[in-house]
Length: 414
Image 1 (cartoon, one colour):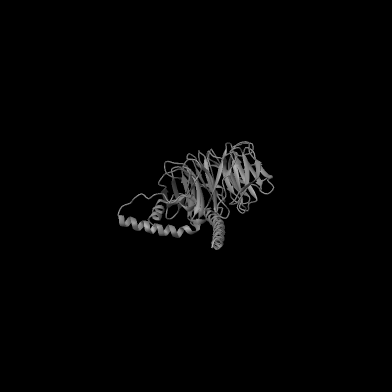
Image 2 (cartoon, rainbow, N blue to C red; image 1 turned 120 degrees about the vertical axis):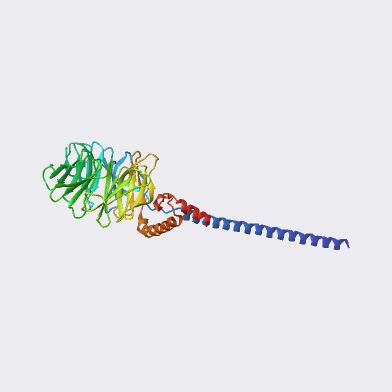
C-alpha cells in the first residue's frame, strides 16, 4: 500500500512537474511570440510614421533664399538658363545657378567702384549691361559667357544713371538723376550718344519700348510720362499724371495695346499704346502702399513690389488687386528690385535692408483666371444681395503660404 501510494505520488508529482514545465514553455513561447509581434508592430509603426512624415514634408517648388554679403540693388534672371544675376550696392555683379534644392555661386565680378544702379540682359542672354553711380565706369557691356568687357563708357552722363533699357541688339538707352535720356549705338566707335534730350528736371525712373521699336516711353520723378520717337529721335509728348506722386515703373499689357505706369501713392495710370497724351483709366490700391517696381507675368496681370515689403498681383481690365503673392523678410523692408524667370514660373526680389534674395513660384497664375472670374461673379452677387458695399479682406494667393480667412472658416465648418 505504501509503495503503491508512493508510486502514485511519484507519478502525480512527475506529471505535475511536466504540466508546469509544459505551461512554462508555452508561456515563454507565448511571450516570445508576443515580443516578436511587438517588434513587427513597432517596425510597421516605424514604417507608417516614416511614410506619414514623408507625406507631410512639402516638396519645395522654388529655390531657397540666397544670402549675399552685400545688398542687391538689382535682380536679373537669365532668359534661357537657370542663372540669376545681382547688381550689388558695392558695385559687384554676382551670378548664381539656382534650382529648387540649392543654389550655387558661379562668379563675383568687380564691375564698379560705387553702387550698381541697373542691370539688364539681352534677349539672347549673350550680353548684359550694367550701369552705376560710379562716373569712371558708368556703363559696362559684358559678354555673359566669358565675362569679358565688350565696351565701357566713362562719364557717360553728368550725374548718376538711374535706369537702362535695351532697345535691340545695337541700341540701348540710359536715363539719369537729372532727367536726361541718352540713346547709344554699340556699333559706333565713339563713346558719344547718338541722341540726347532732357525730358524732365528730376530722375528718370523707368523706360521701355515695344516690339516695333517706334517709341521710347519714360517715367520720371516729375510725375510726367514722356514719349520719344526712336525713328526721328525727337521728343513727341509729355503727360502729367496727376498733381502728386512720382512715377516709378512701366509695363505693357493687353496684347501690346495698353501701357501701365505706377506711382509712389499706390496708383496706376493706364494709357492706350501710341496715344500717350492722356490716360484712359486710373486705379489705386486700397492700402495706397507706394509701388516701387512691377513685372508683367501675363497679358493682363502684373506683380508689384511695394514699399510695405509685400508683393501684390494686379489685374488690368478689370482693374483690381488679385491678391498677395508674398512678403519679404523683416517688417520694415521695402522691395527694391523684382524680376521673373525666362520660363515665367518664378519671380525673385531684393529688399532694402536685407542681404537676402527671395524666390516665389507663380505657375499657378496660369489657372487663376477662371477662379478669379467665378469669385468675382460670386462677390458681385453677394453685393447685390446685401445692397451695400463692405470692405473685403485682402486675398492671399498660393505662393504667399498664408491661408485666406474665408477659406480658414470654411474648413472649420466642414
